[in-house]
Image (cartoon, rainbow, N blue to C red; front, side, top):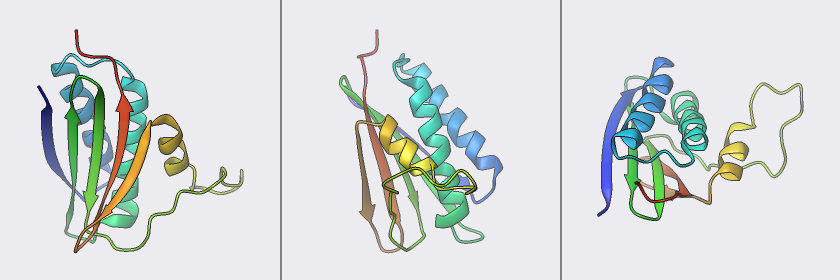
Amino acid sequence: MPLSRQRRFPRDGRSVGAARAFAVETLAEWGITDRQDDIRLCVSELATNAVLHGVAPGREFFLRVFADDALVRIEVRDSGGGRLEVPCAAADADEEGGRGLLLATALSDDFGVTAHVPGKTVWLVFKAAPAV
């Protein structure tokens, strides 16, 4: 049976850790431990991008965790515009950013962006072993 849980987070740096904890605790409650490290890292990256680039001051971003017998899907929705581009190669060593989305897409099994008015949802899929 599919499971789904969602939560809103304010535009604040502390929300990245809170989003990460929410995702990991949710998966643990559901008995899903497969690929938890990959998922934790990717939630951090998507939440960081939402806070830094996708959420206007005073607004929130939305995290949804979905799981069924075959996969885990993470979705981060924000109100920001603009096109999301995954770099084709890692950023220069001197660059401060630019690696997060590349890393997230490398760790996940599928990736996409769904446009909304306003904003977008960035999603990642992880094929996972079924809960025991």
